[in-house]
Image 1 (cartoon, each protein chain N blue to C red):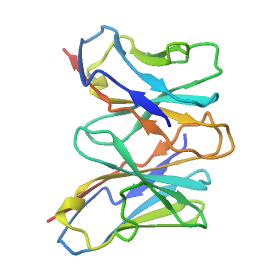
Image 2: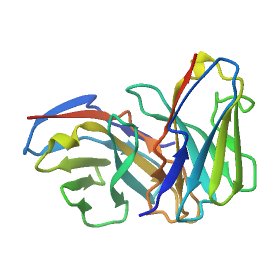
Image 3: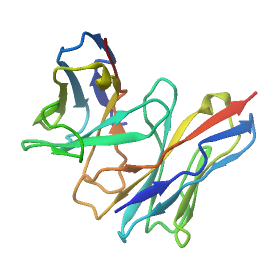
Amino acid sequence: GAVVSQHPSWVICKSGTSVKIECRSLDFQATTMFWYRQFPKQSLMLMATSNEGSKATYEQGVEKDKFLINHASLTLSTLTVTSAHPEDSSFYICSASTTRHNQPQHFGDGTRLSIL
Amino acid sequence: AQKITQTQPGMFVQEKEAVTLDCTYDTSDQSYGLFWYKQPSSGEMIFLIYQGSYDEQNATEGRYSLNFQKARKSANLVISASQLGDSAMYFCAMRGGASGSARQLTFGSGTQLTVLP
């Protein structure tokens, strides 16, 4: 089936570091990818919609300058957490889908980010 | 605006028994899709089952079935013959609008299912 690869699986880094997370659709072209953030025992919170070749659409309350999204090709979107701080520690997960209404979004395995 | 409600924060079921996880939704879209995902403790989101708003029959996928009651706006997930490996968080989600654009999913708050031996 369709596969979305997300890398890295987990990151531990010092405060002030920028961290880049990659999301790749391996066997289909994804014009749109989604980035979510999830706190423990909570639901997925949509951060932004990543559109190939154009600017991402951010949800209300999500800092564009903190969470940089680039969708340079039909198979790759990246999320960069800039100057990360401990409060940015979370589980980040991406998804991709085709435009077909009855096709599910396929998710990456997520990235656990811990900022010390 | 779309909204998904899962009223059961946690559920317990005995191994080999069936369990129903509740999901109600609200939308003004005429065409929409309903999805169930399973998230084990490792974090990955596993797609389980899909129901389209115009589908006349309830969706089934192996041990999973979706009890779709459109008038009541409910889309409950039924897991038959529960297994220990079914212990996980389960999310109900909805995607609205017509085909032609990749639209975002709206998620419920989730139900933590624990299967007891």
